[in-house]
Length: 144
Image (tube, rainbow, N blue to C red; front, side):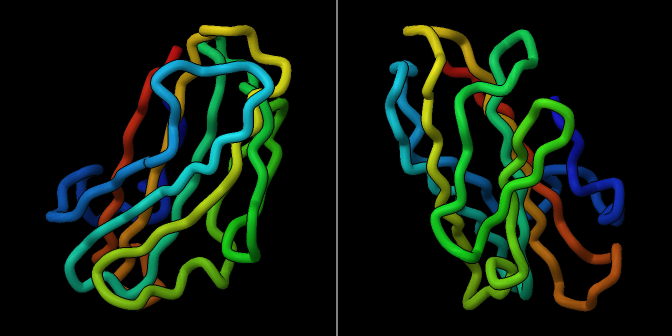
């Protein structure tokens, strides 16, 4: 697994709210040298701000392909050999009870059928810019 936002937003257990976290656009089977448009969607009644972080690694922990931002609502950070794609400031402003971010995943250099692990975490914030009252959702998906 990967770290969650709970290190700073610790007021509730992970996945303890009434919301949902979805990742759309992932293939059933990973094909090499293919670009996928991934959409991370967070829903939470009353959410005022939102954030997310996503990583995709092979089952042995190495970076799986390349993650890229498609607009100014997301950004990428490299930690060691792993790319984390996450919200940028413009991607935190919410209208309504649902929010989504789009990114691209390029499977360059991956073998056909390689197992990959997708980790995603999202923060449904209450907008008070404190660690209290926010809800954290996390999911780990395995693909081949």
